[in-house]
Image (cartoon, rainbow, N blue to C red):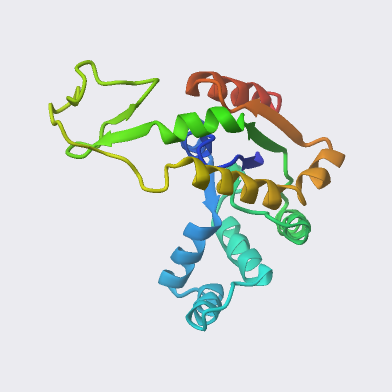
Length: 217
């Protein structure tokens, strides 16, 4: 089974991909991670990518396609794949068709985690962690049992990510919409798109994705 998992930052895409890796033995192919790995390993495509990046240029679709092809060649056909961060353009979507078909694979589903922008902003802006042990908290949804004291280690120091602010979240959402707008119609026309409420709790989102994938038997 091969799927594309879509969703803006903060929608829980990483969490759901990790669950699929754990429960279904799927492999998550993240283009950024694969590029770094190919460069480090010094593969033919990795060397091409390194030369381009060293020159301060953007890696071409051809190189990205080559890296995805290399990753798929290393996997048994029976291993399912989650594509993360690719495709982002219509050209990449068509390239992915070729990459899969030449390896006897097909794309089964494009699953989009839908979010409510206002709720997503509240979810992200309210996040903070214990500065000592990293335990996660939220201003509204998960406060420490004793105000200002970490439940796990008792520390009284907390920190927030500097980019967890409303303006950054809105920018990320706009970028996401701009990137997915060209590819969703392609997959909708093929009847591959399924949408899941990304604002539900993690277990509900996982169950909804499981129900979709379960249709594959």
